[in-house]
Length: 286
Image (cartoon, rainbow, N blue to C red; front, side, top):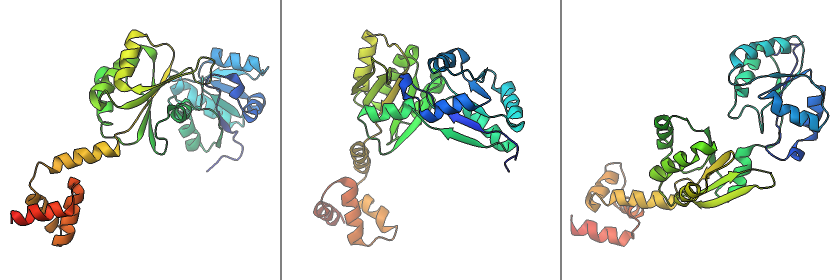
């Protein structure tokens, strides 16, 4: 239940590069709220100075969220309004903003969003890869073993995958991706989004690794990786069926209640061959 006298937490998206991408609504909110909670007040001050906004700030980040979160909730319950901003993009994505939102709901404080740029979505649409279905993984663990464990869970992922990565870990991640997903997997390495030197490198994972080995990466990256293609999945499935005989394959469906005709049809589909071929093989070895 929302507290009647509580202020509102506004999740305000900020530009990911070009300051002109800030929305009019966000500018009005940053001017009108009682306080701005910023991931890095020094970084946000540059944005506020650009638009001559004098609203007081306080810090809220990963290292002080345990103490600062309850403090901000007290202010909200006292009727103050707060704008939450991250250094770039949408607060709550790969930062502790989500923790503050949870505290607000638990305390009955209203929350709303002033939407704007998000690096993950911008990189996805720039990548040229499939945008119909995708999965956002954010920053991978810094620990090599943990990073590999996460990536291993994505080996069979068929949706486009989006990762954030720091320049000093980019090569390690590309090496892991090449080893698990294959050197030929399609990818895009995107950096300097919306800035003057915006760069989108579309190439295979293997070639990305070679390029950045020779050209040390600079700036924060978004990696967009193609999912396992349906064609590859189909070929792998057909290869697995080839390990058993047509007769054994037929029996699997007959035992499930298929009649002989429908079983042959399904076996032919599984193996990527004609129903006539299955009929010949099955009848010959009955």
